[in-house]
Image (tube, one colour):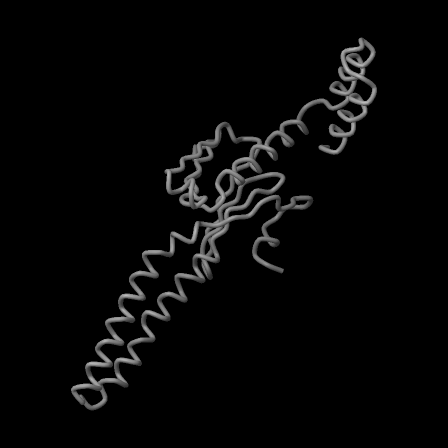
Length: 198
């Protein structure tokens, strides 16, 4: 059982999952590749100038950028931004976990910010503004931010609907059908959607 499954409440299901965009790893990639090139160049120079043991030492040093990249990559993979049928969850950390969640019932606004490059590469910043003491939860440079926002808003509308009096909504639908405002087929379709959202 994964960590996410351990923190889900009874009846809670995952609707959408994403993480920070791969561009978040770009500085690490550039740094580690640059360091590896320097180390390899030093190893080649050491073998040309016949410095005893230098090539072997340089190859051992090559482990540093490799290990650094692997640790950062695992950390990046461990970060998740999740929408469930009840809340938005932000999980960070490999061994030590940081979990922040916002109940969908308390979400007041969702602010999406994407640069031109972000729109091209499908990443952006999303800020969830809630009525809680914290006030806002920010998801920076997440992949697929538009899909994340749509999933959040769809689930929020379902949570809001659950809080309403469904029998009263069905009664209003029936009145519209009797008045001829909607057809029998439309009534049955809307009724079915209301009952599925419970």
